[in-house]
Length: 352
Ligand SMILES: Cc1cc2nc3c(=O)[nH]c(=O)nc-3n(C[C@H](O)[C@H](O)[C@H](O)COP(=O)(O)OP(=O)(O)OC[C@H]3O[C@@H](n4cnc5c(N)ncnc54)[C@H](O)[C@@H]3O)c2cc1C
Image 1: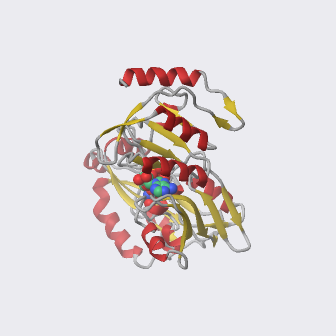
Image 2: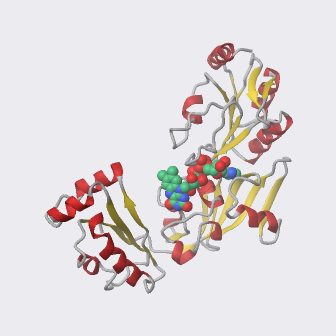
Image 3: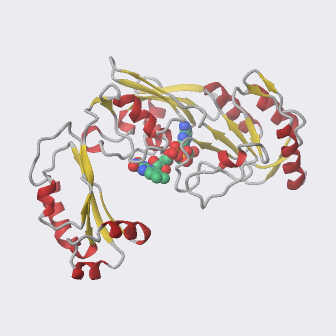
């Protein structure tokens, strides 16, 4: 079938989808061209796509379906990939069906949680995208200090539920990053010096492996898989839920950023080196040297009287910023970590 015909038939069937309970039933789907795992061309029978859709509680989206474009897009817009079909999974059972379908048809497959993959790995051209976004939910057990997270959940949702019990675990810095992708890749965050990486706090994973099995991986069950999942990315199967260890944490923290023109980098980095070694484990100080648009934005904030004409000339379009995140509960003011300590270096802008 030509791509144009395929898109046309997709459009037609989108308009005629009857609803059966919660499940959208696909009917009259034509055969669809697709990419195989080996990179070759293959054809998916329309009847097989219909059978997949009927087996899911979630829905199957084809090019032309409402929501197809919105769902296939990921954070890094330079990847504009068009999967042959998207399985929007609502739970582990849907994931198993989708994996079985991919395996039976030897189909190129990608897995998408929060969609923040820099390298565009959560989407694919011509294959099956297993979309976990409908699987969002976090449950906290304050007694055992554990959080149970469905694999499509975002970091903001994890933090929000934990903060209600004055609990937390290490996550990343942006609330709409996916917890699953971040944790499977390691997961650096502001609580990292105190509690370790996100993957260090993952006590257990539920996983659907490529052969369709549903496994639990923790230090007792499937320990090798558990080891691999903590940093090995999405290479071992589709994770459907994660159990995290939580820690006591007052949600009120001291944090913010301090920005200097690049011309002051030598003094600032020397100071940073001198104090960072003895800094309390409750504080995290990521630093970055920024050029381009971000630097322009920071520089426009920096246009105050503190910035000397000489420093401004020297900075060109670069700035150096240190993000101070003192994550202890209401830490006592401490020199030299205090804004006053840092201000001896004449920062151009602070947001603490
Ligand atoms: C704005 C932004 C801020 C970031 N900040 C941080 C940060 O502070 N700390 C940090 O450590 N990283 C950070 N990252 C990197 C981020 O953690 C990784 O890109 C991570 O892979 C994103 O996960 P995701 O679920 O959002 O992405 P996705 O694009 O959905 O997935 C990323 C990868 O993980 C795989 N994957 C996702 N979910 C599953 C699953 N359930 N089972 C199997 N495989 C899966 C995907 O197939 C893909 O290969 C940031 C990225 C962005 C874009």
